[in-house]
Image (cartoon, rainbow, N blue to C red; front, side):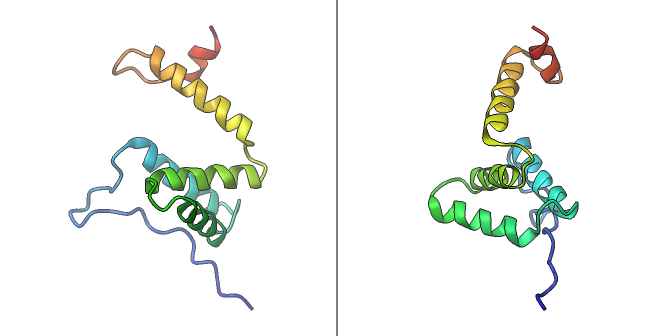
Length: 114
């Protein structure tokens, strides 16, 4: 019998209580990985192993970038979003961000409608 899945960690915070994320995408990647694990898409230890592999591959890389690469690997491995879809969505998001006036919400549908 294996030990129970410990599940994803709680949202990390500084001692002051402030979130540890410097950028919104970092928090979103964290939230997406934890949500997918909580919903049973993949067990948390599997994600943790993917993250450890990314960190081992490039120990000097940014931790949040490693987290994102691990998440992308899990999306592909579980048939949620293959790399080509992730890449296309990333390009669409970047195009939409460039086309969006400062302070306005970024909308992917506005770029796709052109």
